[in-house]
Image 1 (cartoon, rainbow, N blue to C red):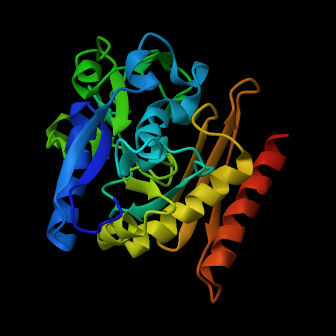
Image 2: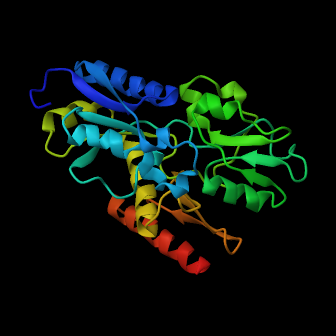
Length: 295
């Protein structure tokens, strides 16, 4: 909206997790900017097509395109997404006006710890990254597909097995007691942007961008932009077994080639007297390095 004072219309998916994230963003914007916020619920391809694996229907974009379209069409002023669901290339006509402060970026096992899983146990996950990382740690494990909302996934823990999910999803729903083990982020590198919520608006909507800027978290923005530079250089999304995470002024990256049964990782130092642009360049270089080692 261009008048700077009316309600902001916030487009979001309708799942319990998405609504909880969107509500937290809406509350923060209202408190910081005094602009009221209204919800616009959108159903995405990823929500509808729960019968197939994510990597077969478009990867990251399946959870965001329809939400973005609501803003581009003028039905909403803001689009709110889990940052890990955003493709690495920006959508034409939109800009990321805020990266909210990141919750925990880690993955968790629900149902069993890694060490307690029996030989050949079943782990359910819809993420090719999570499967590849767990296969490196435990080559004996068997993997099956897992889709659906949080409650659906929690109801489908394999017998004597486990499921893998983002700790942030449990945090926003106050369900962290369900986690059996928090996986170390250095060994099990999270998805790019995991734990962060991104807020988009139209590129020419100055009033909305100003209101949303009140919830932008500078340290999270820096970290996620470096992670996204790494992913953009690879040219892929969640169709690839890839992870990238910035913490303690280091970029930790992971890339696997399941066909070859190989995986590569790296740790890149950041912020050593350089600018943010230098750190983005280091992210891109890390992508080229791990990709070349898998070639």
